[in-house]
Image (cartoon, rainbow over all chains, first blue to last red; front, top):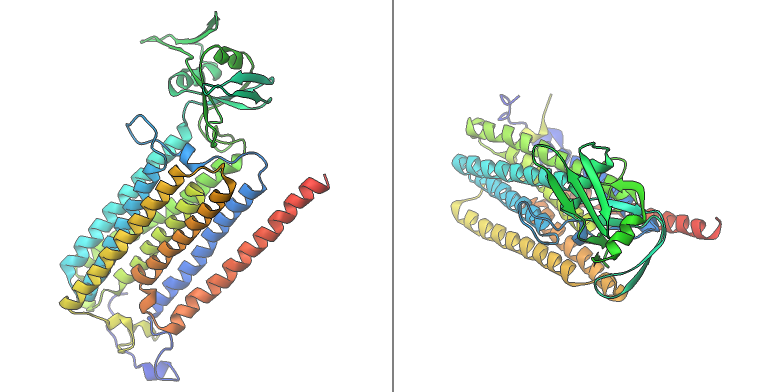
Length: 326
Length: 125
């Protein structure tokens, strides 16, 4: 495989004009062709997402409302985590360019060092994505759907007429035990009296949570917190239908399941590219470390995997804009 | 079998080695692109947080700003990080023109058929 890499073939024998009009080796050219076809796949996915969104008659969730959590921190940080992931990928793209640049100077130590940095960046990105998936799947606190029409006054004083099927969102603490309750967990008891709703989970440690607040329109622009007597009115009007987080059949973020499906497919497909990119980078890192390219006297393999790695960053730039931002 | 990536030819970037001094210049440019990409991303997130979607007119403008900024970022990644800007013009066109034709067609057909679908839904059912 690598044994013939330094054989010289006369270009006059291969090209009628004496030189290739492309001025590029076939390895890099076919990497480019592969990337064009891969780019079309991602373009197709994002166009399909835009199509579904435009054709949807229900309000579509907003990225800033859905993705606003940070690991281990309470509070609201809209898109900060996704921006951080973007930054990690940009930095790892930069270390890749630096590896390619070091290769052009035949600087083996530089290539090895920057390839390692790129791999670490890729692993950090994959870890961030794992957390984001986990957070998306577990959700905020779950929702229940209304069985009857309800008129309530939000904390801002405005009156809302909520139709049948409107999702009402619970907070994180209540939602956790409500999920066990709605799954038929026998250790969870529900108490309702004098306008107070309490869930008690008996076990080694007994947990008791009272329903203190509910949220309407949580994942669209007009988010409103509901407290006071209206909580009981909404709780009374609930249907059997509870949703917690997201899976392949239902999600609490939107009535359209396509929202969650596109999240899983687009970020999943991109994440798979990142994973394979890390594996390929690792192979090239080992080869560089063992001096294979030093013996070949050129580091073109680093350039080829570099193209693939930059492409992953390129795709993420578009996913970030079209899935999260717009 | 003859492999044309093995040709030692001065027109091939395979042998486009550069010196230590040129490397310093190239690394400076890399840092510039990095800072630019980071700043654009931060600006995008800031705009997303600040502006409300409820204001239809301005949100329309902001959406187009996002698309423009994204294309700027994509241009820098492809031309600078992926070195497409340094390839020959035949190579550049071979990559960009087919992609741009297909993507323009895809967007055109999705928009046309997409609105056709909405039209049927509201008018014939």
